[in-house]
Image (cartoon, rainbow, N blue to C red; front, top):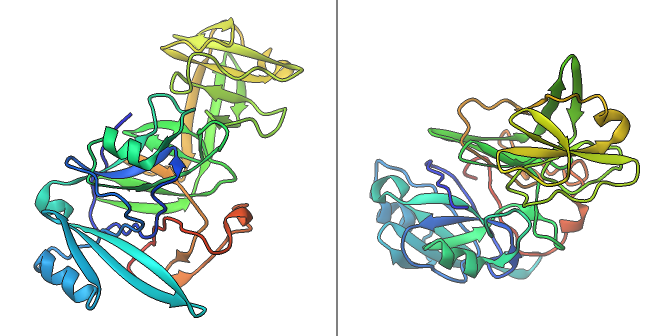
Length: 310
């Protein structure tokens, strides 16, 4: 499932490229530049692209990947130990390059290496995107592509919203419900693994042909063109809702799904989740505990999206 992100002044630093990942950013449409671990896109349009990159990375090893795309290698030291940094600078506006989030496969439960995803996408550069469930490859956190919400947030983690003329970052919450007659059933998440037995979860065709098995005391309802039937088979033009029987019994023969996010970004085209914050409002702000991301602490390669140039 390939879609395009287009915006300027986006910084995407460190990324581990050769792991099994579910959703990646790629620069299209030419050949893959492999083994790039950092990405950064921030080009001042008033000056020469070459001069901007040369001045910003004075003394670094700078190589041309293709016209308007440069690969910068440098080493910094943290605690006396070397940290090898790779940066990609791309002149998006001048060279009609596209920054694209790409799923590993057509359905959400899938895993591929970044090299494979990039080659399938005819990418110049690729780096990892969101977190994923290792057993299945399902993206963990908010993911929207071309205006279609594919997965809901996990622990309200921070996500990046991509608009036509820029981007924003915020912790995202899901505001979803199923309305049936005078009943409103709260939906806890969309296309995500079950975290609590009493959650009401919705699965769309992007998940696959069948929703996960309903836990004890729960049931599955397929809703197609507002018509409700008891089934776990996901209709191509609808969805399946899985939740406690006592709650889903409130749904009659007709129902419809409403899905929004908070914040309600206007004209957002793409959303991709990450976390934790590193910088907020120009200040160091690391909220690993608040976003339940303690497992990612320590020395390891990661992709980073600063809010602004530091």
